[in-house]
Image 1: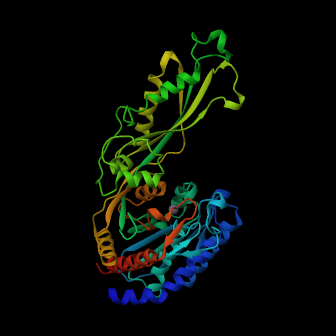
Image 2: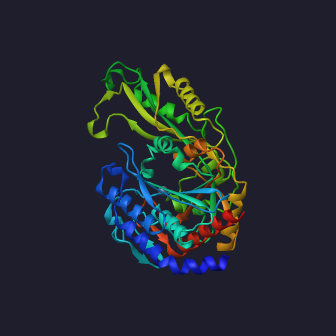
Image 3: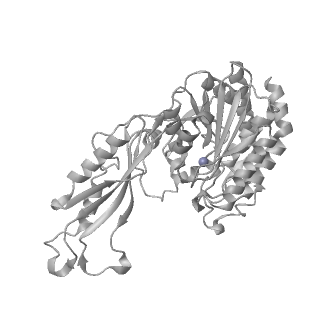
Length: 445
Ligand SMILES: [Zn+2]
């Protein structure tokens, strides 16, 4: 059977690739808002492609949200319903001068297809289209396909979609093709995600600005007080020093400090912070970052003591950490560590995402592990993501019985969200094969 599926994929792959190129040509940037014509054109293109592939697709519409495209294909009785997820929106390209070719004109160089969305996440759509075509409209399981258009801005309406179209989305297995593999040629399943909370902390020392010569040395300024307060958030090693936050461990895997420094572009001489394995620090421990400070700009500065200053503090939280207790611990730390009796107020932010630890047992995981092994000749590694995909937690809450598989098509050199984003075409082919095989195995279990 696997040979048959391989042969079939060889036949349809040129079309899969052509579909991906057509998708890249639409600059479907969700940051431009739900009324963006390119966003709408991309949704229509996806609808047409799904329909051509044998699934009669329709738009799921909500006010003030880009349409999501939905399709359903019946399968054999007594087989599970598998929901395939991807998104058709993309990040803005940034400075075009940083690109070696036009981001919306797909270009192949050395086996990679370059363009915005080539990997994230139009390759995910192409892979699901391949899965549809491989079975000539008669898949071995019942299929549902949901392709949304606002993932890159945090899927703000996803919970509304879940509420409004609960029956459409109801499924036994959920495949979210929006993560990445460990390395090119080394497959991975993503099994943990950190969550996030944030807050704005304000520090006040004076009713209004006063002369820094007249009062400096006696009266504290707010920016100095804020700086000292922010400095208490980490210990000497750079690890979070907020007491009570959950800490976990991850498989160390084979990433080295040099590799990580290179991926992140860390300037030479700058140390890495935190304690424990790199993967634990990235995926299973809390991370506190100062995102921004409101204080007088240098260009407007005068010789005065600043009366008030504010900072936005972000806290990434590992699986097992409840977001509301995390924000409570962070707030308490900030409220009790200000120097010199400075007045502190903390305003929790609205952008909350819960962390996720997926249950990786059961027939769906077995099927994907086997399909990955057959395709790459090696077991997939289990990886985490330091960031959040809020819709994963939403789906897990809505369908607690359904296993969630977080797959993806790209790998670290795909440079998603950056200039010269690309997708390795051989890896795309392998991913298509793996998904097709996995569906076959799920249907046969
Ligand atoms: Zn994505």
